[in-house]
Image 1 (cartoon, rainbow, N blue to C red):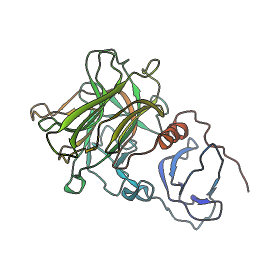
Image 2: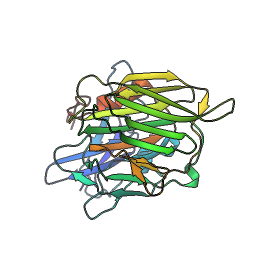
Image 3: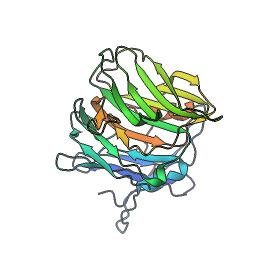
Image 4: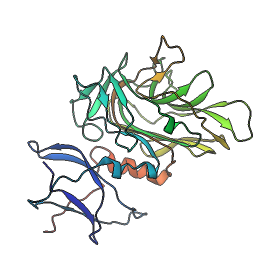
Length: 309
């Protein structure tokens, strides 16, 4: 069951890890390992995986891998909802209560990483209930793996990740606005010099068809520049600061956008499959996001496995 599994650096220092999925019958698993650093410019490095100690007990905890101290606010592997289970698990120490609505585990093939969720485009979504400890001003980092069931040319919008307060024009929406406009990051920010909130829309059209295949959509705002990424490369960027995304008590919605009208709680439903949704407060560099794509994409050759026993 993986209880004897351990990871270390080459010098023997232990590395935090978390098992997302373990299937002994199929002989496959998906495991997250936190490294202290990665060498740049293609320089290789190694980590060691150990097993076989019969007295070992389970040692796995996502909280040490996706720590809030490294900028994580919410991380959803999306492997835990089932027809009879109405929640998703946040892998960070925040443990945000996350309710799932009409989601179906994606069993059609290997998801972005491990198991994902299917969204029907009409009523399926999940939302993480905001807490007082998360209400803050500041930067934003968003990331999610998607396999869209549409090509982006249809008229209706499809939201991926959103925390949006319509009345105050505050928060963020990452998604597809429709009508062939590609991917868009909408930010409602408070200028550093004061005044009314400002809404900025940064968008770009990905090359080729977005339908079906798995893609990584990411966006960051560091207080000055907003950057939109597609499959690990910059799609669009714009300087809109100095400013901050204002505090808002709206929930974090995955696969839809929350509406200001309480009778229309969610709109702009996503159609397709999703995996590995992340919301953070520490913007990542272009190199980091490129590494996310290179190491996580299906069919990646980023890792080379060798038995050194």
